[in-house]
Length: 426
Ligand code: ADP
Ligand code: ZN
Image (tube, rainbow, N blue to C red):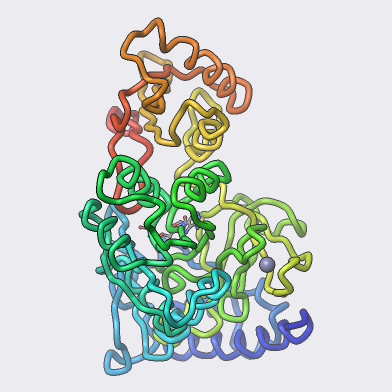
């Protein structure tokens, strides 16, 4: 869709969404009343900046159904985020919401050429987490075979992958890496016997280095799929076959980038916090949701011909950012550096602590088995270049520990890369 036509569609949908929120959700009525605006003030998508923001905090306050704009008799499903602290974030869906969500996922899978005859192995967790059922419904929309293996039981997963001839894999990149390692170690399952050709990986940040690793280890094309429970789940956007940025389905989810301190929009192309307004959601419409994901938007036309805006890889969530001795560190920077070295695996675990008045930064990494030796003297030649690279790119001095192969715990869903022990001393 050309930009002008897209703006017209977004305007029409925003006007309807704001009206829906104002009339059905007391939380939004109150927020808009406080700002002195009514639905009549919102005439086009340009007026979006007049609207109030919604934060994760607001969602928790309104837990579980305070933001719902329809009676429960119109709701068909409830999901909740994996949120580890406090109350989970809840999203509810009408029939049309589920259909729109499936459409978003289907657009991503279509870029991977999925259709009838494809067997899509869904190894995202099924349950309250949106990953499993989201990918499932997206595959269904394209007429593909849904193979709901869910996450875990990796030996069996790879056996079925081979025996059934799965052509696509959908899971977190960290779980995909784990499955790839299982295949390498297996006597029964061989890469040559797999029919896998594409992977849809998301739900956590990952890097170009990780992409290369997964593509090579699994013999596939690896595409990024992005989403968040607050908007529906995975499929808010995804990469196209060009693998050059993640298209956002902006006819359904309107993206803005703001400066998280001033809350003002940043200049086009600049980095900042991603904010979404749902344009189609019925059950739980959301205005200007602050995702805390840091990225930038690219409005140039993509070589694939799709006109939907692209976003750059997500640097991380602002709440994942560590401040160590005054230096900002995103865990994904460490992954990016590790994948520059052929002798390290992309696995890592960071422990931050405080000794006296000093922050400490301990980094567990793994050497590939062909390079590993338990002898510290033999590890030194590998540690030194990694240390130097982290000092120069990130600006902190890590204490690096080499673990034996597979010594770092593997994850089935979103990987946990950090233990910040300073939180416990406070
Ligand atoms: P939780 O907040 O408990 O992790 P969600 O599953 O809703 O629950 O997580 C959504 C978040 O996951 C996004 O806001 C983003 O930070 C991250 N995420 C999802 N997909 C991607 C992706 N492809 N790349 C980077 N981060 C992603
Ligand atoms: Zn494209």
